[in-house]
Length: 343
Image (cartoon, rainbow, N blue to C red; front, side):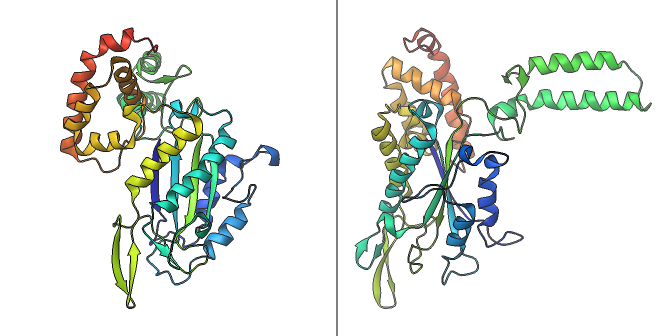
């Protein structure tokens, strides 16, 4: 499970309206019949129109400063292993989203009228998507890039030969291109993986747009707060503030596991991924204490993961972690190959 929370992009040429973002989330519905579309939903209803989402989010911005985001985007990316536990991706992920947003409100250190924030206090809309494309930052695209560069160079040479700017054999270069296409280490359906190519398999994930203001349009609720839990004096009153991201991410995992009976491996946990970045020695010490089969699953999970584990990885720690990881993985080669789980 990989979850991101991103504020609305502000300033420059970015619109203050949610219209552009909502329109982006409608891309998979283009050309589909109504019954085949994925519609926006929230805690209380399905088949909510894009127009209603824009109206509700844009109309819920009272007293926000010009530089403050009007909404936050939460993206929930289940792993392929987690998706395998679902019976119906769309309906199951809707069910999970509604439980997830209860975890979201529970992670605020805020009160409204003297009580903790409840699910009815927030205004959000969610959408399920089923397609993903390879990005330039994906490992498989990056590792294919040297081949892509050579292929582009050969194509430029062929073009120059045809235009009379260069002498040489076109057929020889065409054959070199064919060989390079085959030699690229990462293929999908017999083709070299490139940026923009649609990913195979179940790629279902969740997009959630949640208003910065509460449902009454009176209180500001920011998951981007730098505070987990603190208090501040405001107009002579003590006000709680803060959002605990660690708590939210950990609860999100537990909710998924409980809802779908998922047995989460060590390497899939938020705590483990955080340790991998901030304290790789602790991470690998914990990893090596796992039983052989669980250890093999952990390494397979890490090898299969093509999305960033955490943002803003410190370079020196990441290099240390990868160096240790490569050494440990070599030593586990036999265990992985002989594992009863079929890795």
